[in-house]
Image (cartoon, rainbow over all chains, first blue to last red; front, side, top):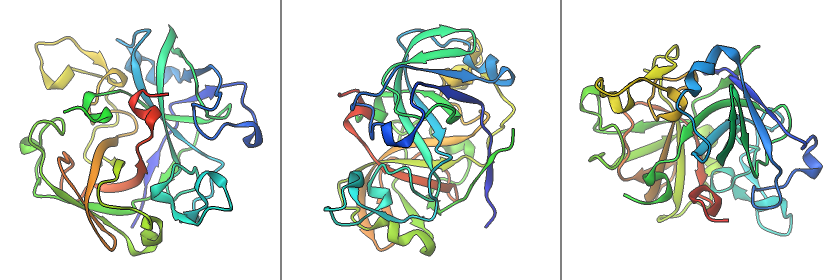
Length: 137
Length: 137
């Protein structure tokens, strides 16, 4: 089966520059970062406001796509688990999912807090959080 | 800038077969469906249990990738809005995000309720829901 072309629409600007210093999840001290969108998609940002709760999708381009089992949270004392029960970046389609709040919007630059993505990470999409995402129907 | 190849790892099996009858969001009467994973990634499902709260990522292969503004919820009486402030399938990278609960796990088939994806929709990823996804830190 052939695949689909996911095209970067921007990049993360962050002080996080290496995997070793990257927190595993956003609650572990991730820094403030900027989402810098390409001019070609800037129109898609209209209506975005400070305070909006969003889901950012990225492409974790340094991940290993051949991995199907991992030690949860990288802890080798824990048994291997299927990647789909973990948030490991190593998975067949290494799409990062990050809940973020827009803390500043300056043209096609959007500031967010607590983002655990490395500097330069390609952005694929940005979506508003819906009630059903957080388990409310 | 070149893109990345998103490879389908399975398909949605659903009674929903056309866009006209598809609910816009999962709270609008979406049916029970099966996620059928390819044999090649079956190992990645180990550890998945009934009752697990998951985020399913799909590739909305019938979407228009050239759209940057839409009428929210398809309502043409409402002003156009940037796609990144909406959940429209029409967007540069048409990745569908669906909060689901595993209601049955039978080998590489996973049953979920309230899924608004059409029959045959390619699956890209499945991830567990984290506290931070739902706004708890």
